[in-house]
Image (cartoon, rainbow, N blue to C red; front, top):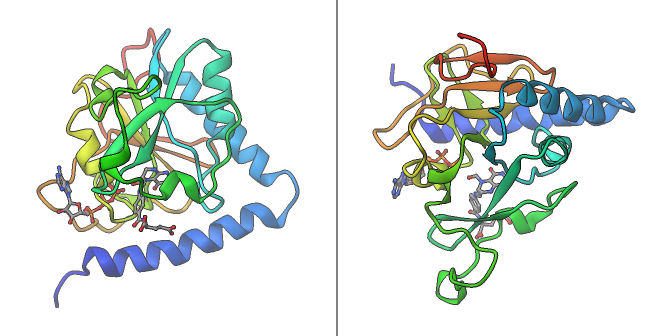
Length: 213
Ligand SMILES: Nc1nc2c(c(=O)[nH]1)N(C=O)[C@@H](CNc1ccc(C(=O)N[C@@H](CCC(=O)O)C(=O)O)cc1)CN2
Ligand SMILES: Nc1ncnc2c1ncn2[C@@H]1O[C@H](COP(=O)(O)OP(=O)(O)OP(=O)(O)O)[C@@H](O)[C@H]1O
């Protein structure tokens, strides 16, 4: 028996995501509660006066609007990506309460992107972040993350500060009990936070400020 390819696993993960996202919208208040739960949990382990990399979520994804808002309210700096045509990520400051439309996943031509313009922080901006919050379809117990397939975060995470935790946001029920397919360029994450506010640590890098782990 051959092990499933990323493509197969991604296909199944997308179907599960569609079901879980629909369930969030089936009952009034559930989406808002999920957004709040994610924000409360991440705020619990973000270092003081941090610079945090987050992203603007799409309708099916665990919502990041409250997270971005709460981080900004607490005085942290928040940056979010846009994607260039070679699937590299460029970074800019987050606007409070932003909710994603397709613009956050629409590739921009690199030759017309002038990174020297005010507001762009550079392709290596993750090197300046104290915490990186990534999207993803699933994560397994080793921290192997399955993304949308562009390899955007694989490229971007090369620049991260190795001391800064990387966590993925998942709907509750999306983490994988089976080991996910992994390539050499896949960079593992340190844990994940779910739409019920559950934090699962893969490495001891994710700790509450002032705690020993
Ligand atoms: N909310 C959110 N933002 C995110 C990600 C994500 O997963 N979620 N990304 C996680 O990596 C990055 C974008 N990843 C991308 C991966 C593939 C394509 C892509 O193939 N785009 C097609 C059209 C897509 C469409 O409109 O449906 C294209 O531009 O031709 C674009 C972005 C950065 N921002
Ligand atoms: N550091 C890198 N530099 C250049 N290309 C890379 C790098 N890392 C991964 N890639 C390319 O990205 C493509 C997609 O990788 P993969 O299927 O693992 O995406 P993913 O991790 O699921 O997506 P994402 O990171 O966007 O969430 C692969 O073809 C791979 O060759």
